[in-house]
Length: 103
Image (tube, rainbow, N blue to C red; front, side, top):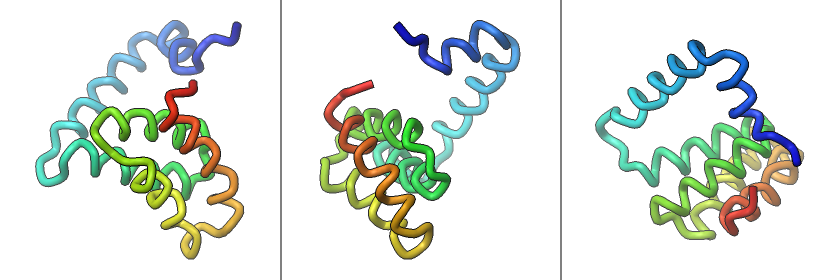
């Protein structure tokens, strides 16, 4: 069984991982955007970076915050004219897997 890459990061670099966790919590606490919208933005950013694993994880978190499948797919497809078709094709399957709860 493959170990989660984030767990490897936590095991190998516990101090850095803890500080990274602090950064994430500070970002979550920013005012002005609700949790669902923050996750949809994260999906769009991860798509722009062609990071299917990130898209998948944030899709799962977005669904937990109340995002619909259509909203999650929309966050990926929004990148079509910014990041190109390849980014969308790389990340759309991961977004659907994340929405469906697959890891």
